[in-house]
Amino acid sequence: MTPAPMQRRLASSLAALLSAAAALSACQGSEDQGPVNLSKGVPVGAVLALTGNANVYGQDQKIGIELSLAALNGAGGVNGKPLSLSIEDGGSAEPSANAAVSLQINRGILALIGPTLSQQSFSAGPIAQRRGVPLVAPSSTATGIPEIGYFISRVSAQSSVIAPLSIAKALQLNPGIRRAAVFYAQDDAYSTAETVIFQQALTAKGLKPVTVQRTQLNDQDFQSQITAALNQKPDLVVLSLQAMDGGNLIRQLRELGYRGAIVVGNGMNTPNIYPICQKYCDGILIAQAYSPELQTPANQRFTAAFAAAQARNPKVSPIPPQLTAQAYTAMQVIGEALARLDRRQPLKGLPLAQARKALMAEILGGTYQTPLGEIRFTPEGEVIQKNFFVAQVRMNAGGKSGRFSLLP
Image (cartoon, rainbow, N blue to C red; front, side, top):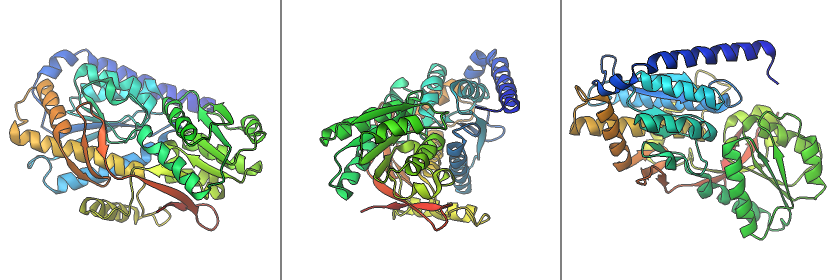
């Protein structure tokens, strides 16, 4: 549980955010019809989980967005006009994400990156859709995100494309696997969507789960679920959880004697799991939509920029994680689309609502050379991506740090 003083601080911050959003919303109708405000640069916003349980993702994303912003502005911004970025903390829950998205839209931003979690996207996405604001989701993988509406897209490939790859790799590495146990967080949209895909992938391989255990995002003690699962003698465990609860469950799973294979979903696709499950992270399998080893000019520029930025902290790995690469890509997509739009239809003097609508068309119509490889979008806003990978976590001596080692 959250300590009482922290609860009061979070409640106070959320109340302030909601109040600011409400105050700005009074003039939203006329403001949307006014011209784009370019006085401080071309305005773009981001809503990231910088506090709460999901802050481990938001911190990775913030680095990626800021690196991308620096690269775009270093190359001339939007045809000589610098991009201006405002970042709001969307917390780790739906109300805080909704308030942050509303606040950013009311500021007059042209496009929005975020929110961090699928559950937040399902809640806040309709706000951007109603207001006609392009929203590029950097890490929402649940089925149905682009279907929220025309103005919603994502650069994070959906779980149905990625998740089955790690199941196939687990079976390739361990052909003797016969019994699979599944865990998922029943109060999280990403987890409930991904576990269905995992279970379908298992069944397609002739491995109908012997047990399905439900947890909660804020759970810390998993002994009862783990004991029930181990009674079924699984030789594969599949987790659809986020970093904090997933890391704790893996640690407890190993401490209680499980020695078999572990496959995890996209919620644990961050180096921030290392301090949580520590040495017990070693060996887990995860499918990825990004490889730092991808030999393209776009990825080489990104990895070099990331390494240079992290060089100031020798305790931090110079290898960028997937969430950072996807956030970088989201900012890149918006920046390049804005430059094309401005050449076709100058932003100066353009009504804000008209500019947002035209920008969405540019986003969907473009092809982008990104750290993820070449990507483009379907008319519905779903990312089309060619390159996917499966990695295995390799922890360093001492169990405090590690890396995602790509498998052939």
